[in-house]
Image (tube, rainbow, N blue to C red):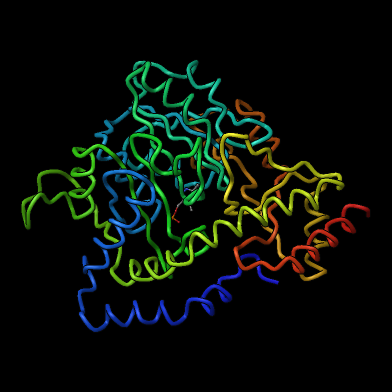
Length: 364
Ligand SMILES: *Cc1c(COP(=O)(O)O)cnc(C)c1O
């Protein structure tokens, strides 16, 4: 069994993916070819925003968003320590200071009620992460940001396709940033990402930053990066979009089914708030004695993963930004989270096998 089954997805989409890639090889516009604008239009429409800017990765999307917001050295960005390193890394790369706020113990998302106490004169933005595919408390976070004149960047790398109060993840704040890393809910066959915004000025800034800060060829009006997404990768995502609605339905159904099957076991499931869904970029739950459970599952051929074993404020690179025990819920979650195999092509039979093996592992 695979942790994420990308082979079945390719088998189902092979003809479309190959035709899309062949079209790029035929026209030869490998950089900024027509598939780039086509994908940006399709994604902007899907997310319900005016502007989509494809970029070379989810990490680059976050960095470009911060650069477009004109983050200055020492500016503070409030975020969660319980995330992939890219979230805090880009804040530091942009010259900013990550200010870590603890998570809710049941959703593992940023606890919005703790944000306001951390806002000071240097605070410039809030960067919540929609972890595991569930959007954080964006209404509360947007309201706090509006009161204090801050920008909000949603790290939607794991939540593309999720909805929140009937609206799409990525389109809920100043910027939404997503990733097309192969294992994400919508993945390409390499690195890729996208930014979403309704603000025409910020969209223009992001477009310029993506190509070395050029407003026209060889006119560099700002400092930028080499951040374009390849035409070939855009072609792959365009092909995958044709099945994406079905995949999201499958993810929601499999997540629901995991929840029902796990209800009798001594594990804590992730809470999903009633006004949103979770697209389960990983199906993550809280288990006791995680290492022993992982070993037992591995012995039965069932792969698991830990997202994430160490909160960022306890990582050597980020320890200087926060004391190690200032975010106790993140520390507790890091000790107990475990992710089970999940993808749109996971079969119910395999899902049953996972849960049966987990039940045996927990009985030991
Ligand atoms: C994957 C991920 C990123 C980075 O995306 P890349 O495309 O791998 O650069 C950023 N934030 C979170 C929460 C992620 O899961």
